[in-house]
Image (cartoon, rainbow, N blue to C red; front, side, top):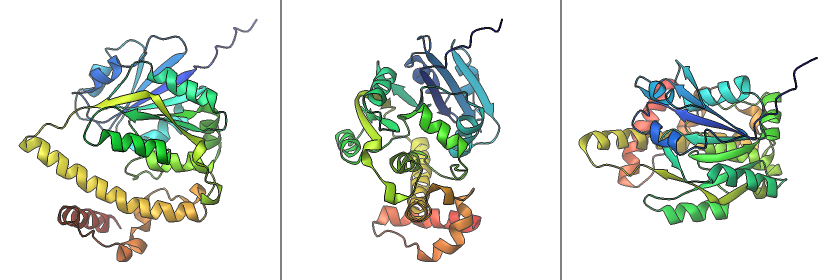
Length: 284
């Protein structure tokens, strides 16, 4: 007789981590790793620190190390190629701490809204937290720190030819758009396919002011600027062919787009935009 087939997990938690040795233990300690129906995976990508070593100390966490970095590339590899099915996939950034009950709340939100492809968690601290929370309520936004995708949506994504561009900075806005269009172009946009979940929340580490942190923040701002320009490219693709038209690398579109990009007028944004456009030109 064949052994009975194990039921697939109710929730498959996917923690994306790059050089997070300072925060990964806090992140994993906040997750329901021993709860029935939960499978957890820590995707350590392109790291040069002790993130994987620390993560392996947590029972119930499947740790996978990818030599190549890049969140979008690693997201594609695990979610679309390696992961087994689940009722829902819950995504957590390796530097976020999840509030108690968040995973169950995200699952309950998907259960309560069968039309939805995704449920989004709420930030619980940080500068401008109330504005960000209201943005998620009003715009049905998705923050990469904490969100869930319905398992059947992930399976349809796996069966399609759609992949995140490997050099995409920030997966959340594109994934939110694909969820709202149900993998179609923008004519299929439906805000109710992403549902905010007030009972699911995450905490981020407060910014520490130091010379080292200022340097890291400057690099982060340049990345945000590159993301700003990438989003303009992605938005045009979503208005046209939809996600099936996404290139493997957005850099393949830079040559066509760079002449159309202008630096923003705010002095600080102008400076980081200048650095971002130089970086993009070098990859065009």
